Length: 388
Image (cartoon, rainbow, N blue to C red):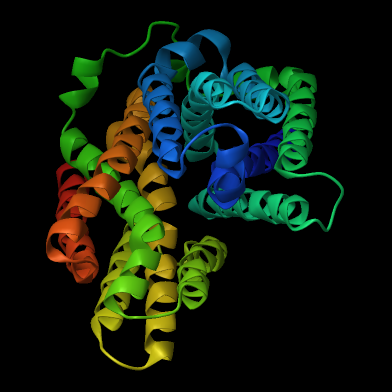
């Protein structure tokens, strides 16, 4: 019974993890003038959030071993709730920058904590569905904001932030109430996971296959961010699609991730995580080849959906393999460092393509992604061979 309750709470926590991730992008065109910022200033906030997330991911092993998964999750969601409510009532660019710090710090440790807990205690099916629930949260956020921005509900973008902030606050209170359940559940974990002393970074990096695993995470998350950030520019500037059509096409990428992760949770019972990673890589390369083909619009639509469907199983499957690849003793530390490298990929790869696109044209978009996918595949396969 406790196992089931913790699983339900974990799913809810991942919805809360996805909620804040997409709301600024969907509302920034309305926000920036009201808070005295420029359209480009969104990049400053993004970098602050990302740095905070990287730092909390790197130190997540130490924090989680001291406080426990349940407490870290509750505190992290409370931090994001406070940041969202602060943005709603502050309505100033400097406030947004200041509150980006707790927003980032709240995201890294909880991501590592919940991913490791699920990897140790549940099947790969639940890992895929867990990340499907993140996509649900990421989809709900812009829907709430769109109602406020469009005037369908009373208020403006600040009202959207308040609603989402109060949702997060409610979830945080639920998590604090559930702390006794977490303590009982964590008492059943393997003894090596309960040691208070964190694993040293150098010790983790010397594990066979560790560096390759980190590069694989860097490439995957960097690709996912690049696809979402620059897909519209590629379609408008290289394929001459109208901006509103391009937005719908890029939305198919995220739809592909959400549907793909739900289906992956079903298929992984028959196909293990390693096979799901390979299937995802094949679907991604197929989708990238499709968007290279000239002419017919439906091919472009299918291409972006295929890329999303291919992305779907890779990230959760790589995470779920971590205890098997590196042992339960090192899994929490390894997942935390993997999260950090994933967010570093988010910071680096999209701006690099921005420079590439501005110099040689946005038609380079599929080729940039194909090269990144090849590197990720080599690293992921090398991890499997070294740790098998």
